[in-house]
Amino acid sequence: MKDKVVLITGSSNGIGRETSFQFAAEKAKVAVTYCNDKQGGQHTEQRCRELGASETLLVRLDLRDKKSIVSAVDKVIQTFGKIDILVNNAGVGGGDFVADTPIDDQSFVYRVNVEGVYRTTKAFAPLLIESKGRIVTTGSIAGTVSWPGGSAYSGSKHWIEAFTDALAGEMAEQGVS
Image (cartoon, one colour):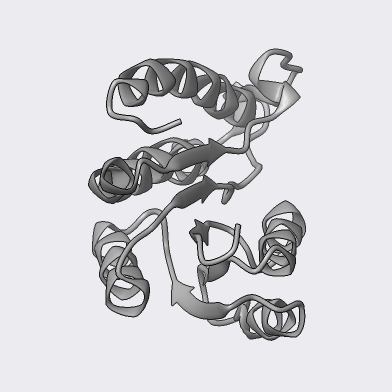
């Protein structure tokens, strides 16, 4: 992984944060993302440096905002000149019983978990094709198994399953895994 450039969405906590640490330990150049100023991301960026990442970059990235995604692409290119690996990890839970869930709550889950992954992948795709890179997307068992009150989250994760299957075939032709 030495000198590979990786951007991980949702890397200020949980799986994304731990993934950032692993790439840093492998000497990758890591773009650490955060969505809002409360989350920050500075701690994750500092920890990546401590673990030996050859370079780190703190990037504000709101998957619901097209301008934020474009800005993240620009910042990665200005800093590293390329991207080798995109890890679509950011996501939110939410929703409840359909009859009780406000449409805005359902839409929020889809704006982040579906549209955000799609927009981020689309924005970074030309760079990943150029580098013959890799796209990794975090899914969930909820993509295959649902429960009462879980339609928003499970629906978004089921979409991730279908999207990733289709994307793999499309990008293989371009040299991206």
